[in-house]
Image: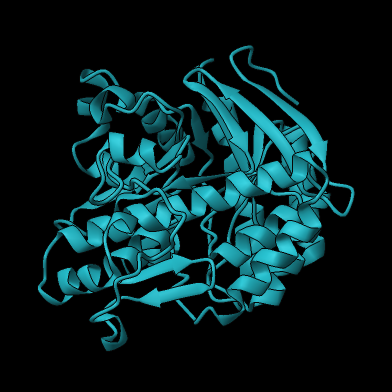
Length: 380
């Protein structure tokens, strides 16, 4: 249930074939038309793209990382410079994750207690503590529109007791985050954990609803589980979340994953895949994906996609291949812009299809096009 006057959420239409929702979430820096995808700008930068280039992809909101920004330049520096929006030069909505994912991604450097997480900095090895209260305080200094509670993420599959302890701790940490939040112009989202245990996911969702948040995220997925298990978990979790709040799926994923998650009621996404794969020479296209370094594109005069408005598609596949083979930085920049544009066009198409009650047909057609898609990096 919305409780802060600077935020509002509205569902305009639910597709008759399933749970896909056409919705909008108003923030102090503008509304996010949803379903929507946020590129990842970990340290306040979507790698290789300035804010004009990001906006040109059709992006409405971006994501940044609490842990990384607190290490450098430091939240005090960001606040002194006018907050993250001013520092980046980005005037749209920003979501900051809490640093919870670093609990799993930096597991060898991390110690978990009830108080919080202790990290060894990946930069200089110094000891760094992140408690629920500090996670909120850092995000308030950063000045993001959406802040995330600190949660305990564990890899999957995992022992049931490990998953349950992490989920229970995430609920206790969420309550501490909620009590420590002070900014009326920042929406705090709760995060549902529970691994692949559907009953535990639903119980976690119910307890977070009792605490009360502006929005709710499905966390702890795309961390090693099978795709079918991920989708089953998303469906069970969204069913336990309030219909009048935005639903955010963290760190997922491939274009086909977005289509399936939208069908299960998800409104908001982020993932590093468009930029990470772009930097490594993989382009997402309607037929799946292309590895532009492949010899077959050496003399290919065609663009990646003939109807794509991105800067990469003003050039031939042959030229893009040449850039990568020559080690030119322009190659990763162009493919990153293309991949984000591909995601944004996909989500714009999904919004239009839901508006007209045609999402099932849209989803089926796009999934058929992606049928040839090869396995790509899903890590976040």
